[in-house]
Image (tube, rainbow, N blue to C red; front, side, top):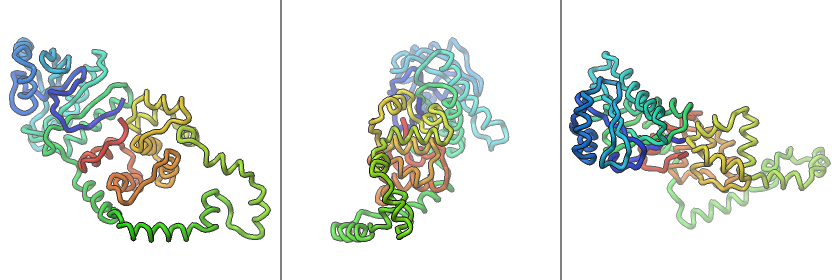
Length: 340
């Protein structure tokens, strides 16, 4: 199942378990911890007192009481002290131990806050990287719906270097929509340029010449029509086979649910959303031309007048196929995420 990143109040998320960024005494505090205790009610505090605390990096389990979630998994994140006191390792343990506990309980869904990124002072960029990395590794091996819940965007940050690179690419490639006259003129010019050479390239026909006439004419119209009529599903499955990948490898890297992928595989006429088609291109690690071909089979294209499309084009051009980090960038721009 996929990793989702959403901006919401974690106390309102309907999942099997939510993770509480607790303090070592488990008696409630500020931020996410305080909000969870407030909504859950006094029963949560009484159970936490009986547990008697939790060391940094470890987890403890309680009921959810008045929360929509059945369980609360309490974990204590590290306070940032400069990076020399195993802070990163301890934060990794918070995610790993929470996920392992959810797995052992047989849970289907879990929601995390961004642990230690608030009052505990952990660098926001690195806190996000660790969260995404640990959850991604878990999902490579296991099926579970995992949600990263961001309540306050100030507690969420991506690499400034990556952000600047993407922003520069947008500045250079993003084109505002034409007015009607400009759009008409551009369309006319494109039609004028769509000559015999373009047609030959579309059907992979050699350059037109007297010597190639005989070979070209011998091609059956049926071959050309078959190429055009290949559906999205057929094209996708052919690409998976050609690249020597497995279904599981592709849909996990695409951040797509197994059930959705099964629908695509079983229905050759399946019509995906644009986000799903792009996610699968990312999962296959297609280059830009291959991505455009796959999108075309679903009736879509990449546009220079869409920031979403330009960002996708940037990552594919850079051969950067970590879909969770791509989603982090899309989230930063308040755009739809890939997969799900």
